[in-house]
Structures are given as C-alpha cells and as structure tokens.
Image (cartoon, rainbow, N blue to C red; front, side):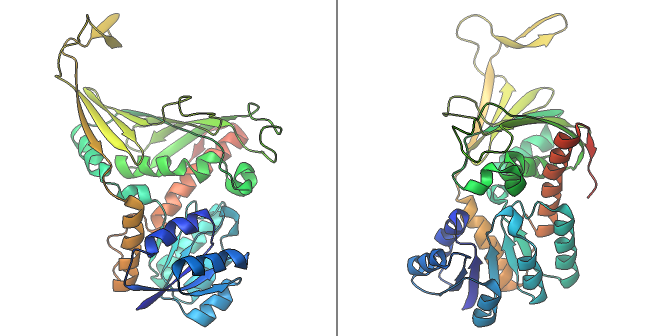
Length: 353
C-alpha cells in the first residue's frame, strides 16, 4: 500500500485523520508535530505509524507517497519546498500562507515540477453546488449579499491577526472561494473596511484582530458583491450567515455546507393580505402570488470526498478530479489578502494574480 504522512497534529489534522481511518488502501506511516506528544497521540489513535518532531527526519525514514500539511498560516514555506524537491504529492490546508509572494513561488514550482497538489477548500465538494451552479447558469446574477458571523476559535494564534490573517483570511476565505467557484469569474477590485473595539482584552486575552469587516467586490463579469464577516457573536441568534445571489426575477440563498434555496414567483398566495419587500417604481411591488422555494440540502460528507479525491489523484497520478488545486487555491488567498491590504491602506485594491 502507498504511504501517507501528516504534518501538523492539531485540530484540523485530527479532522483529516478521521477520514484516513475510513480508507483501507493506505498505510498511515508517519505523523509529525513540533510537539511530539501530539504526534504520538495520532499514532495511538491510528493504531499504526511513527511519530516525529521533524518533517525532514520523517521524510527520510518513512518515504511517504503523499503528505497532508496542516500547520498554522505562518508555518508554510520550507515544508512545501522540501516536499516539492522530493516530488511528493501534497495537500495543504487553507489559507496556504499569509505571504502572497511565497504562495506564488510555491504554485510556480508545483506547476514546473508537475507535482499533484491540492488545498482544503472542501466546500467545493458539497452536492448543493450542483443546484447552485445550475441556478446561476439559468438566472444571470447581478449581485451577491454575503456574510459569515461566529465566535473566536480557541487556538491562541487565531486571535492575533499577524498570525492568522484575521477572520476573512482564515475562515471566511471559504465563502470568498465559493464566490469565485460558483460565479465562474474572478474578482477585479476589492474595497474593505474593518471595525474593532467590541471585544476586550478582559473578554479575550491576547486578542488583536478585527471584530468585523465589510468588503465590496466587483467581479470581472460585472457582478458586485458585499461580504461582511465578524467573530463577535455571543450566540447563534446574533446573525443569519448566508450568501444571497440576486437575479432580476429570482434569488438564491446559499448557506455554506448546509443548503441552497431558490425563490421564484409562483407559489401559493400570501395567507393574509399582501407582503412586499421590493420597490416597483415609486411604490411597492406586491408578492401577489407568493413565493415558490426549491430547497437542496447537503447530503454528502464533502470533507471526506475532498480528502478521498486527493488520495485517488496521488494513487493514480491523475489530478483532473481535484476541485481546488494549489494554483487555483492561490487565487482565493490572493483575493482575501487583497482585502487585508485595502483595510490597511483605506483604498480599493485591484486584483492581480
């Protein structure tokens, strides 16, 4: 059997390990973490493999056929270059890195060497995307109103923006990536503003990042979008996180990793009186006929599919079914890092890959 190695035995590494344990055609040969006790914990859970504190030592000893790289955003670079030098297919967790020049160089070397490399944008593998893309193909979208709101992850590096990139780069990059994937076009310009001051050091010691940010995006095909994201939420009722895609005669609510709901005219009449939320001319446009909702729910383990797709690519040498190769993932990272530059400068930023 082919050998798989994992670098980074934290929370996201455990997420992938749960998937690996469902695969019967792999030898889980090596686990590496700077805290070797965590790697030893993975060996114990897997029931096989060896623990290492140094990935070069692991590569020399194990000689893996594929590698999953699951380290914090600031820890990338040398790991990828050594992996590429050895010609090992690799899967790297988003956001790849916070250094765009570094990501660009890694992408160039991956292409030059013909290495199979993928990234952890697993939401692309959800079955709801078929319904979403079919809707967009049939109903040209003019605008998107999007948001993601949550709390603060427990890992200490996340709450420090220089270490994580902030919520937009480290978490909401999934929504930004799905905008590119679903709309089938690239962002042209971004303008972002951020807000702080609601979360105190008393509430969250070591917290040095944005509480929220709002970004205006113009895409190359003329679509405009806004993305609001925040980590200020105390509970689940503080915001309804979703992306609403608006066409001229319908709309689609896209809830990441959950559901797609398409609203069209033609449902049952409103039960009591008339309801309206759209202006027509100088008056209201009544929903006389009500709305018809078409719902598609997530029904697959998209994270498992994402990992399995990369494993199959590494086993077969055919990367054609990978939905987020490294070179494409680089574009989503560039998208979010451009937003961070706009927050810093106070000016719009043009995207240039």
